[in-house]
Length: 151
Image (cartoon, rainbow, N blue to C red; front, side, top):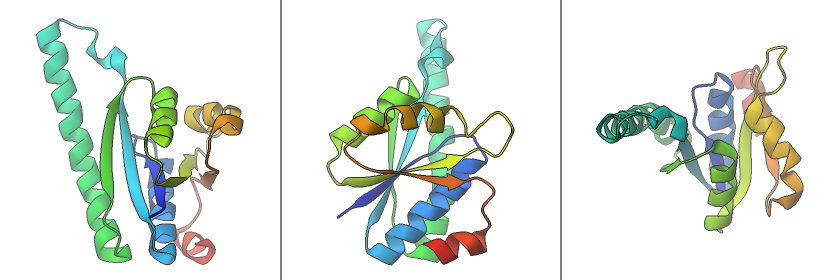
């Protein structure tokens, strides 16, 4: 089954990327894989404190994922899977794409502020030529109605 890979982070545009991925998966018989990356600089403390912070980050990610997963199951009939990796976001996203041959499309949300589309979109589009799959970039301010129309 072809899967849409979407990155779960604290950005506003993440919501539209998740919506788009789940709608496309529902319409095409695909799946959704949600990737969350825990960045290493969050744990530059003593080992014990770092371990506690890492576990708290995982719990926060899983709680956040459950909200989106419930919506995907209830509204789109898609049962997403969660993958949590630790490291720098772009290399971990690239590694996940290479590690899972069922991933067919990487879906990213583009930021809407004047600072540009966001660091993930900027960095990953520079590496797009080396990815074995296409990237879909979803505007962060696209309405639900427009998302439904294009999926």
